Image 1 (cartoon, rainbow, N blue to C red):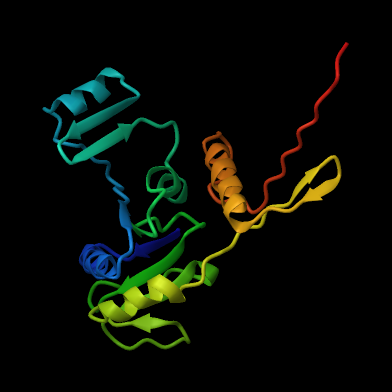
Image 2: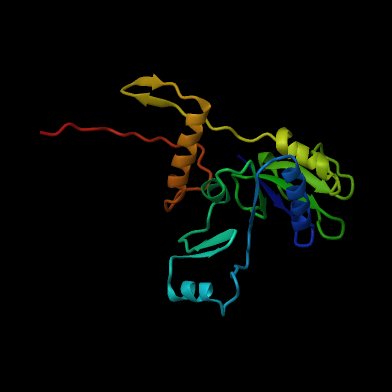
Length: 217
């Protein structure tokens, strides 16, 4: 799974770009999911709907089910991790596109620059994967035009470099080899559990777990 955030000022064209990319990537046979960051909060159906009334009453979660689709709203003690949410709710997706998520340091980001809306690129370092801009930019960055949908989609499908995780398993001091599929299961399961804990960063660089069995009696 690839998780990529599209960031930019309000009015820069994030929603339009992501919508066009979803259509193009679906044509290529890929499973695509989208997560939208709602900085001002959100309500499903409005305050007068039953789902909002249940949450206001103190429910920890509400599920809405109809023919062909369903939605779940959960109340959490801290802000959800975009990558954790993607891996828990969209396990079968090939690519998850996040609209927003600038503060999530774990996400690779595509910044959208639009004349009259954006003053310049704000994303720095390894977080910046590419820029989508309607005018030329300098600085050695990978830059796409907003209308180059097929080119951006091809890059998302195969060109973007994502961080890889490695897992080392030792049992009684002996290293146990694991194939990539098993390593992926370990990473997704452990990260999902660890990120749900308080005082844990959304993007830990290293996790060490030691389990010792004591024989009693």
